[in-house]
Image (cartoon, rainbow, N blue to C red; front, side, top):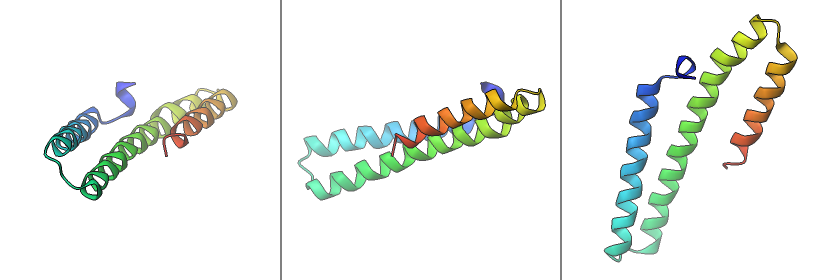
Length: 91
């Protein structure tokens, strides 16, 4: 799996999301207006969605390509369709 994605990029994005979540938690304790908290929740959700996109792109560019090149097109396409289905549930 490490071959198919830029792990440094993913770690950087995930750390940023963790910081956003900590900030949201702090906002709750500081009695920040609900609208401001919701804005930050949406930002974290969008950032997490982008992490999923990066993983999915890496999967397509490496794992799917490799499967097709090794003559396993039907199996590879079915697995990719399943991955897309799982990812689309996140929205």
